[in-house]
Length: 496
Image 1 (cartoon, rainbow, N blue to C red):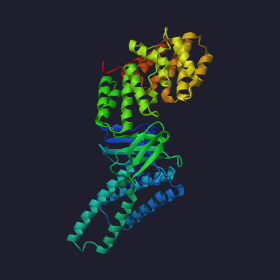
Image 2: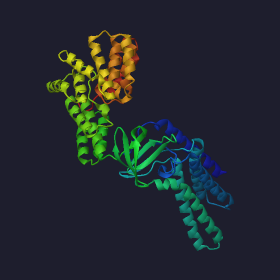
Image 3: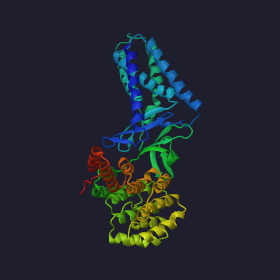
Image 4: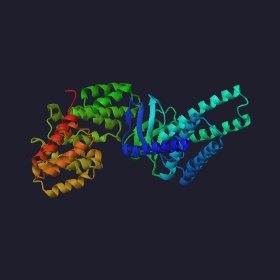
């Protein structure tokens, strides 16, 4: 009875942890703890270890993953029923093994063949596969049983009359074999995996985990060398759910400093990281980090130079949303103004778009910038066309009387852009609604930047403060106070 109660409690614990993982980790990036010793990353494993067989036909996977595991669990139960007496230690060990096996089996049966994994541990390049509490229970149970059986074997040598040796030999070979077979998925996956990728499978609509090394990662695809079996797999970038790369120490520190708004320190650390990094795709990620720092320092010319370098090295960059466009009337240095004017005649569309965005609010060059933007409305690159439309909104705010119909048109045009490109245009929409004195709608659009994980922190700060002012004007005093406090907490640079 105690064994049964123990198994039930452990299964409940395992299932509760998986419900939490689905609620807290699904569709979110990996979480890192204790200097990346522990990673929490949601994964749905439809295969065996390292997701082998994940894309096999459903009937075959069900037979292997459910049918075979059921037979193994039943075999252990039969052994426990026939055993005359086992120690409390062995009962606890079997409770762990049974609970772990049953926990994963319940996933297979009630989650359409999918097991939820979310734990990954390691030091440096030595990492496990992604696993769950059920896998931990099985591994711990095996270790405890191994220790218990080693003690029994030692005692039998001292007292050969204690047990029928033939009977003991048969059971000691059968049961460990069953348990080891059932837990191969965990033990085999805990290999020296440098990096982890989680991706969606189109055939089964589940998620697969791969361990190995990322060879290339851009806007189009991720190329991954799987550690076991040693193969190279090309995945669509749209199917990537999460990835945990092996970044050097300086790179990790730079990301931490950037998140803490310590920009000068972050830039120096990114430079150090770049000198140490050998892989091209990670060098581009470091370069993207430098661009983000420069945008937040409002060093527009250096940010643009590095952004153009990034696109030259990888036209399919995953970091195109870092394009250093202006969305508000920013003050330009003389050097920045000279560059912006010079590129209005450039043969590179991206340079003309950036330059025009810097000048579109200018009394001196605004009309010329508008002319350039209208020429670019027929650009063959969709992203440039869509961003050009949103930059023309700023000109309309200066030259036209904005109406509700204009703002409805802007809202429709905004849908052409992916979410990561919408922060600047959303700010302009906020200015549009503020212009026609729809204060609550204006505040709502400004607050979109507050809620998003934006790369342009000064713009998000300005948007949040404008929203606070507008809410105060309509009588929402407490919300305004709260927003101003949040602005100071989230958007104040720490390196001033």
